[in-house]
Length: 377
Image (cartoon, rainbow, N blue to C red; front, side):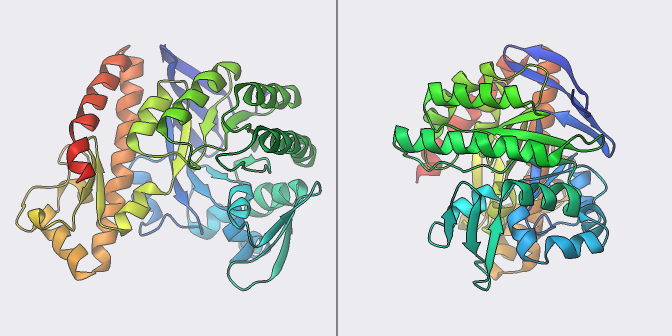
């Protein structure tokens, strides 16, 4: 039985809204978690992230274990105190980052050994060590099992081998985590784009028993249609009474279509990464503030969003900041993008609660696709 009650308040089709109750505050679902890779959501104060509407943020095990070091964070009072974030924190297992270091790592049944991308020093990450870092040293409210992310495209044999090893690592992660009253552990469904492998993975994880279930191995090049297809046959297999978390996704349209398929939680670096590159997100897609057409545009990014960056600064001013290379441009755009993502989640929660999600979805898709020609140019 999960120690973080998950109450579903309303269901509309496959979409659902509710809340996960944690000792550090409730997480309203569907929820978007801003990514705080190195104990910071880039370019934002923690207070700005909270005021933008985020109930929970994500911390990165791989980066924090390398710098400043998980033991050091622990000595300094844990990740919440270290970064001055009082709400819940979910940490990833480090598996995805290690997977991406294909030339710097070696995988085995025991775990993975790799060289730091910072200084080349050697490190080892096992399921047990990942749990120790996340739950014991960083003090995460929600920890993730260590898994092996499968590349795309992946031969079926490779996807099956990887999925089965991730299941064995899931058992070891659960054993290392044990029973904790104030922390949760999520399992991760793997299996690439193969329906039977995804089902076997989900069933194996449910047999072990986790507080929530993540869908991993997507947003790795498979494309929007394939992602939706995987969700179509994966989320129905997962327990109704546990949160479902789609890892590393994505664009606003990805969030809307995933919520329509029963996903409850998301994370992605896109809002702040786009902000650092001069882009503001909207229902119509990304807006490139570097474009000369904004040089004398005195309108705000989005006056309907209760965020100073969205409401109080003109596009002309932000255009100037971006073109001049001023830090404030990245700060304002990142702030707006986080606020926009959180506003989008809030609008979806309201639509589900009012039984109007399909109407919301249709309206959103009309706006999104209406600007496809401009985005392609």
